[in-house]
Length: 231
Image 1: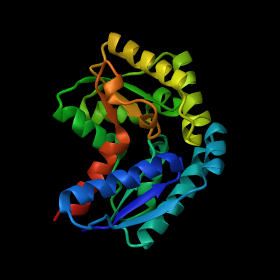
Image 2: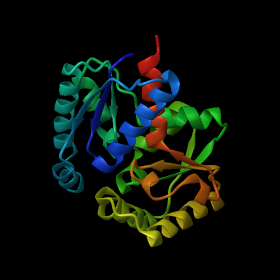
Image 3: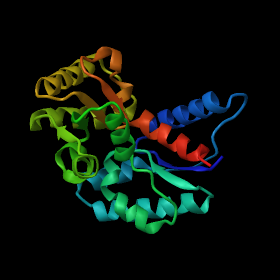
Image 4: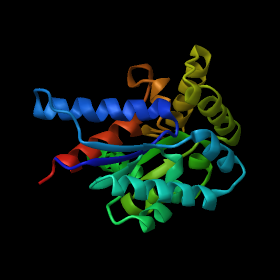
């Protein structure tokens, strides 16, 4: 079994979900007392969140590149970045390490293509929804068309993610607002909706939605397990 490198803490709430999903999958596939070989670095998100909202992405890239290198030095065979938004600096991280980075958008797109979806909705942080680094990868690399919510809805989603979900707060009224936005994306032509922030699955689940939901945390974790068990 290969060692999975995890760069987490963005937020730690969703890193917990990653750790559980990976180990449950390993146990399911190997049985017995098996668990995953993991090298984890967890950052202080408060510092990075402030840099995000100041637009200091090069500073973020430098911090995460250094952290990723420490994961590699710890014996990881490959790396997963346990967040969607921070994939904005994925190229800088890749340049700092010699092990592969498994991109979260690729893991999600592979499952969407397998399920034959061509047009999807995307919800997540405002950085992920409004900027091009995530949507263009889905379109250019996999031919998947992406619909995002209106700006006011993006602001609402962003606020709930940072002020509630990253702090472990689960609010029923926020869930209803998220589900309403998901329904509107379906009405605009989305065949499925990507939960493009690793905390969103803490709030909404597929059985509550009128359209298939793609949990990027679970899909990314599953891709890591595949890589860890590959010959």
